[in-house]
Image (cartoon, rainbow, N blue to C red):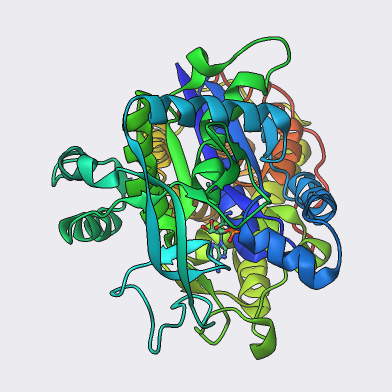
Length: 498
Ligand code: ME8
């Protein structure tokens, strides 16, 4: 089976920030988890380089749009290894291979009769690159997202007949559909369609920084269609020497923030229908990370959590864990350095870190590093029953916080098990050697299973743990399915106290 997951492609008009790291980490957890399940995975991220947001930022900085794109795309590319993102490709929309394919797809849409020439007149936000309806515009015709005055635009350009997809979209977003998740977001998309869809601009006449329209060279494509198509075009050239589209299209999951819901849940499927291309399976819309004060993150408010500070101080695993643990994936949530430090100490260092070091230390001290090959504790096994199926089901529908909670309950269970069994007491009594064997073997097995399930969330620390625990493979498995035995090595603290 194949699994194809994407992040939005990020605008190169600004430097990478926590919001970008967030969606990337979430997609990475899904990709890594699916690889552990033996799926053939493709994970795509990249940068959105055309359109007004970039052209205007370049002008402000006195450089060409391509120079700005090159400079900032590099910063986004450099972000990926720092997050331990295992993306299979990084697409840049100024890549000529993308441009050519966008022209091909949109020409097919034009030839199929879904495009006509008209005059656009209305409000436009150059930072969103979005045409706003009266209902969407903020007070005094300002952008509800950026707060800047909207521009009144009037230009002749080519229109996409979005209105003809009213019914197919209603069907796509119907009550029983899971195309858009979570359900509240699906309802938001439905409400937008229910207002009645209007045709939208497919091209821009005044802008130069974009992909030329093949049938009207004076115009460029509206940046959103150029950008959305990245999910499809990339597959054609991401793998050297062959077109991976047949293997991976349709995409399994597009992960996006709620700011770009309209584009992904309405414009995108309509455009694909017009082009005769199969629709992606799911769009998962996550919430917004907010400042520590619960307000929108903003540099001027000084409430922005800096992902690089977290990485430098506590490591990438801590950042990844924190973001998916502290804010329920799908909802909005406040973030702060204090909250990261607190999760690090209470959960990573005290709960997981201590469990790992106690387990390795005890197997080494009492059994010379050899995990006894004996029957495992039935009560503990019962508390682990069905874990991998449950976690798989949750991660499979992007419920990443709920899946992490399932795993964490087992971390806590293992800590209680250590206290209940008190192996240090058993070790004093030679007659209880069999009990000690069973306790140590069960504990080692529990730690291995927990480590395997946490590997997608914290790849570095969990690889170290699994290696020290003598776990050979990375496939997800249930408690007791690993064969047991094996040897355990010394483990440096996974999450050292700071
Ligand atoms: O919109 N909380 O790019 P962009 C959570 N180029 N996620 C956040 C966030 C926050 N505070 N801020 C940003 C664009 N994000 C277009 C996309 S896709 C075909 C084109 C994340 O650089 C979230 O995923 O503004 C959001 O949707 C995305 O960054 C917007 O990134």
